[in-house]
Amino acid sequence: MTNATTVTRYGAVAQTLHWIVAALIVTQFVLAWTADDLPLGMHKLILLARHKSVGMTVLMLAVLRLGWRLGHPPPPLPAGMAPLEQRLAHATHAAFYVLLFAMPLTGWLMSSAKNYSVSWFGLFTWPNLIGRDETAFAWLRGTHTTLSWALLAIAVLHMLAALKHHFWNKDSVLKRMLPFTTTE
Amino acid sequence: MLTPARVCARGVAAVRACPRRLHRLRASILALVSALALGAGASATAAPGAYVADAARSRLQFTGVQAGAEFKAVFHKFTAVVDFAPEALATAHFDVTIDLNSVDSGDKDRDGTMRGPDIFDVAHFPTAHYVTRGFTKSATGYTAQGTLTLRGVSKDVNVECQFTPGPSGATLTGTAALKRLDFGVGQGDWKNTEWIGDLVKIDFSLALSPRH
Image (tube, rainbow over all chains, first blue to last red; front, side, top):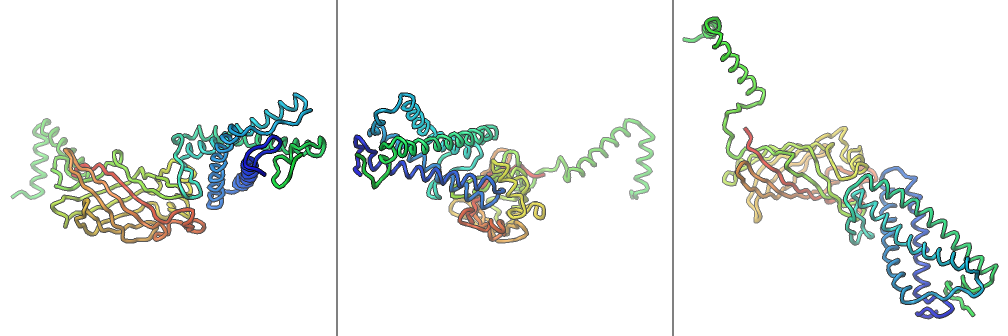
């Protein structure tokens, strides 16, 4: 593992960001789905507070990732991938980046519209983006939920594609994002 | 001597004598009744330093901390009877009654929870009451020593306030701080102070009109 993205592998920074964000997104689904089933109360409040703190972390890491990626282009896709496959791969990654911003931003807007300021693990409070607005809240909530299903769908597609590349095509697409491995 | 009977007789005679007087008598009875209904004579002059807050032009709010972030809530309905003159602190007095049901934090879910049995329990304790015992001059204005009764618990709470006389009344601003759990505001899960801060800050700006 080296700091810079080499021709055939993702660099250490890109890998670290990828796996941290992946773990945080799994955490987000667990927190949100658990909170959804709870009645209004302290337990729900705690889970949603953590969901918001983790979400704002994802947003900050998304900024970092996008900045890093602009300066460190990812390794090229393996030769021999069909143009349609390549387009699909690029579209999936582009959608991930859009959602990495859209999910936390719609969540932040939701909290603002509901007049609940977002704290980051109790350390500081993010400013409200918009004023109290029940109609906007309802719309944002629907959007946040719809986008979460889209995120889940492309995450499944992403994982299946990685496994297909690894076991079917037997190329380096999965391994080049795995730490502690080497690629030819 | 005017005995009631003679007054009555004269009144009856007067009424019989002249319809215009009847009209005037009716008018004065009406005025007397209206004055009584208002609780004070409309023409009486206001006692100096006697005020009542105009809730529509006033603000009474508190700031709490929820999950690490501050939130503000106002009470739309309250009555504040204020006797205050800077030169007569010994007779100064605040008597404030707050309708806890009028709490508004900008979110109806949170307001509903606050009205519920674990927080304000408005079904059993619909109002909070603050009444002063005495005042001292402070660096920034005045310190009111008083008692707050909230959720059936009475505790001493000091209020730091500033009094500004105006052309047709006065403005009273101030701040206070209290620990919500001292009053049992937060039962069960809501006793948790890691997620719901114990310290609650209060601030107000009251538009005072002369009280007649």
